[in-house]
Length: 210
Picture 1 (spheres, rainbow, N blue to C red):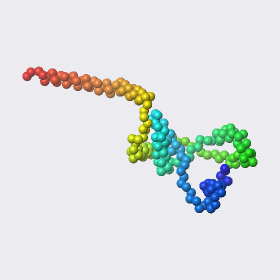
Picture 2 (cartoon, one colour; picture 1 turned 45 degrees about the horizontal axis):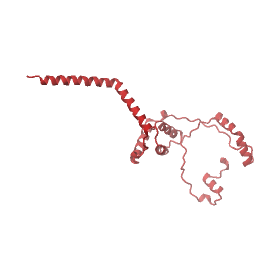
Picture 3 (cartoon, rainbow, N blue to C red; picture 1 turned 45 degrees about the vertical axis):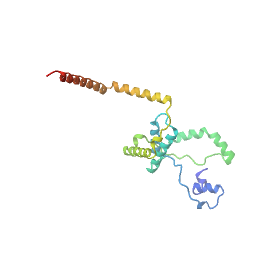
Picture 4 (cartoon, rainbow, N blue to C red; picture 1 turned 90 degrees about the vertical axis):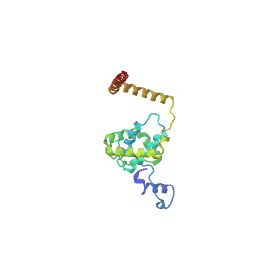
């Protein structure tokens, strides 16, 4: 369907196509499937890359839902993502030119399936570095409050299997090894050794008769 074929609002046009009368009397429903903008998509991509391994998909969906809720409230979806320039558009259309013409002839009785011509749009790009630091802090606070108020102990509730435990155990051993090889640990060991010698010397001194 082309835009010029729609009479008025898409919702009313759909009802009219279904054969309903007085479509304008129906209440337009709230938009329940809002397309995310470049800011919202980037922050979701950033969070998902840093989620724990083997995190249950149900918990990921909850987290993404909270992020979507926050981005809608903060109007982070006004700038739409666009990665398709004229060159990519031509490649896509040429790839499906044959099947598009067949559908256009068979079902619409015309040569071209799409009547609208390509309109150049600005290529959008947004990285995590482009966010204001305060925006990221506010989002983190929002998610933390959501976790607390929703009973966060029930999230990430999947039982860990043997492989998960082995991975965590190895990471813990590697971290302990890294700590013991660090200069600060060596300094602590030297201080402990010095303290032990001083304490031992003080004890021997106290044991000597007056």
